[in-house]
Length: 139
Image 1 (cartoon, rainbow, N blue to C red):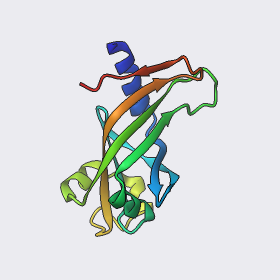
Image 2: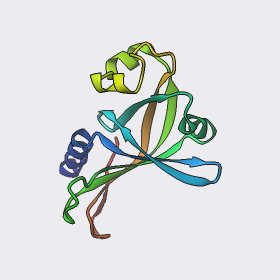
Image 3: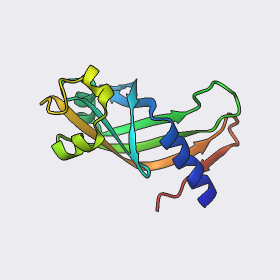
């Protein structure tokens, strides 16, 4: 199982852009997001004035897909179901900051930046066949 755990972590570390689905009223909504990780814990920066933050304040459940970036049918990817907490911790924002974010925010001191911290409930390593599904032990 350690081998599958390592494979899942490599996919998460290599594929920093993925989709994050939230529930908006009663319908799912997916958005592309840029993720940082510390093991299986994911982080992403966003603007606190977005609909996604409103959605998450009402329902913190998310579903994230990472990987499968080349379009080949034999690639593996991960599915992550988890819970989001929202923080405006400036030290965490500075830790996660990268220069590309200057195109989105008015610098790392922008008062509208929040961090979404995703604690996974489940992580699944998948392939293109339904039989290729491995639940990752998060302990």
